[in-house]
Image 1 (cartoon, rainbow, N blue to C red):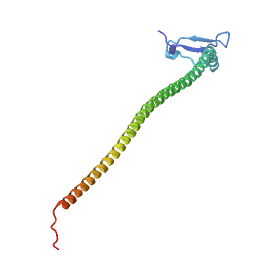
Image 2: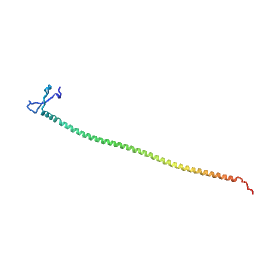
Image 3: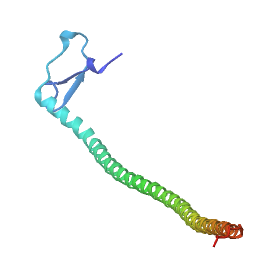
Image 4: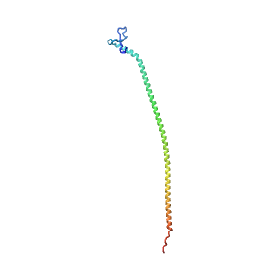
Length: 163
């Protein structure tokens, strides 16, 4: 079983091409050989050149996705705002409906108050007329009684004066 930690990357000086790097597996810890910096640079460049285009495409794709996400979030916020405005309009419509109901109630109360005012005014006039009529009747009775008393006085025999 091999793992990446077991692999030794080194440049072989015995190879005809000095730029070629040879990979050998160390058998013991003492078999590890130091790698030249030039070989490390070439391997790094190869690794980077192999993965860099994919990483750049991934970065570009991620940027595009992020921009799309921002656009979607803005659109979503606008839609939420529209729904809130729509709900606010429903609330306003409800308030107008309630206002109409209360207005009709006020009109009915006003109509009743006017009717009650008219009825009380008529009752006050009638009560005043009745009171005046009773006073008139009482005055007439009093006058009638005085007339009867006067008549009785006149009917009572008076002694004649002696002359």
